Image: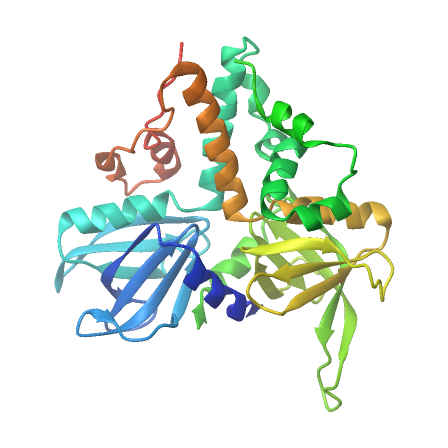
Length: 188
Length: 173
């Protein structure tokens, strides 16, 4: 499968990591662990070769897209602190990770569990539901999948900040800044 | 760069309701084969799931995706040159690469632009922050606590439930 590797390299240099650190990695169907430096950015887990415990290359040697996956503690004879990432399609194929202490691996598991796009969407859904509840409309209002996607106002506000030039090409010019600002304020 | 293609392929085959948008698009690609010069528009079945745009060689439900584009640090714009009718482009930041697409109708083009505009993870995070700020301003409380790490003791099928409880949200009465 092709993927936009070049752009992802750029992303890995531009976005600051939510979490990074050293872990030994054993991909599925491979025999040994290899020490790698991991950087978690949003739902992307980049990994880099290491030399004596530090990143030895500026470019990642691999990436795992973290969607539909779970982590779990593993017992592995050779190492004390091990967890795996299991992707839903094939639960026998585990990516194994070995760390330095229990705290470290639990923090990694926590970060990986919360990384997916789906998870972020759920969080937004919960907040929308809270807002709706406060307005007395009840939580059911915010639960449909449709409402997880942002409203047009939120979209426009986002793009007004990021690229005014492109924004004006697509959206009607009569929507002024005042309208966008007001649309974002939810009356609680 | 290694890529978890197999796991991504499984993601790409999920049912329709898991996707934000799907449809046929013309995608401008490098011509393969002996005569490699230039690029052509090829029809692809496309499915957008979150910040990943999959494109397939055929609409056959069991087929593997031909490729995936992860949409971060990019913008979606109209294509003013319009080599093909109803075309649009994804421009990648920090790169002179532009990916051209064309839809079959104006409505489809606009629908795709609308979803692709907001597809990035960073965009979604901004929304979360915006909602969080609203609640914080109105109630004086942050609705998102740090998740309780001990909740992670989970080796069972109820993983999904535990994920929700690890949010640590405060629910307002």
